[in-house]
Length: 67
Image 1 (cartoon, helix red, strand yellow):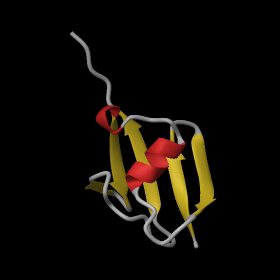
Image 2 (cartoon, rainbow, N blue to C red):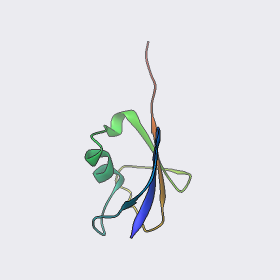
Image 3 (spheres, one colour):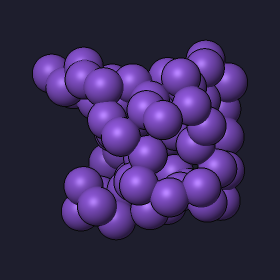
Image 4 (cartoon, rainbow, N blue to C red):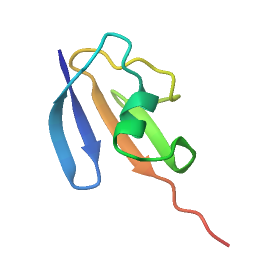
């Protein structure tokens, strides 16, 4: 089982390591903070507890903010 990860210049197929693999697990693996990222699963905004399924497309977008 695998999914497609899109983040900045990354566009790659990745294996799903276990059946309850979530967006949070992916962010932890990539050493990214959920507080600074927006996650999309197949084009829909999702929360970090969302489970990644076979053939999903996961897009991670960095939030830009400042004062």
